[in-house]
Image (cartoon, rainbow, N blue to C red; front, top):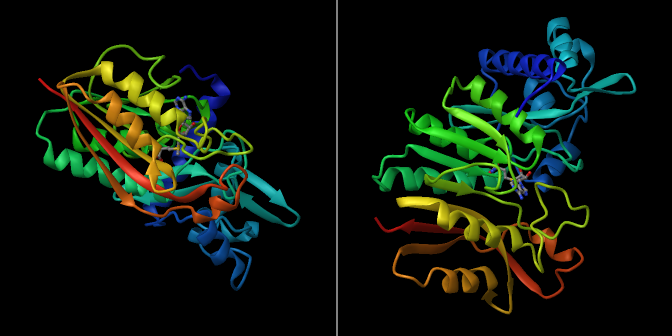
Length: 316
Ligand SMILES: C[S@@+](CC[C@H](N)C(=O)[O-])C[C@H]1O[C@@H](n2cnc3c(N)ncnc32)[C@H](O)[C@@H]1O
């Protein structure tokens, strides 16, 4: 992806801001939107710490940060004014040793760059695979990288590997590049791509945490398409299987709408993976996530949304 001079300067300023937070020992664990709202509804609505500013995303007086920090946020184009107060347009959250910039709260914009509790569950699936699967990873791709959680974890666990982070959203690629630079990872490249259309070759490891909801505003990080949000997950399985090298694996973390006890994604992948060249495993990681979604249009028949992980390995 090619950036113009202004975008390069903006992203440099964002990187400097991240370095500053790291040096200050900043730590924050990203929570669900409901938990974020509940925390922000308590006590003072105004920020008094760095975690309030960049984690809880509360408005703050300019005097809370140094003039340098405010200038850096202005240069990074992540500062909004709310009357007499300021508010960050981005949040920063930790994933193990990584610090990641991602969308501010609430994530209303169509091109909001996602990081959240799903990213932590996705990270566990990747870490578990890297610990128990002994094929060396040379080429990996993270489909729908968002802020880069999957790509950066693989790149830091396999320093010799070339890791490609792809997303349909150009802002996600810019944040992933900033986050990779902040982690000192030179083995991550970013590319704009609809699933794998924009990148060539085969991979030892393909990972994805795609959107899996029916989102009325069709936000890129949230809308999975199809009847109940599963279309993108199925397209990823279809496109990824022929791009696995022998012994290579696909890790798909996603959510499925369960109707009358039935998991339509599992039924579809069972048919697709019936041949002898695939070893696969499908498990429910959490039986009930984002329960509030059941009140949204299109979810009348859905009894729960389950977080699932599909692991497919191509035989050698
Ligand atoms: C739920 S977010 C996950 C982000 C990141 N992988 C994580 O775990 O934190 C889904 C991501 O998929 C991207 N996406 C949506 N449709 C896509 C497509 N057709 N091709 C590539 N990426 C896509 C979105 O822009 C978003 O960044």
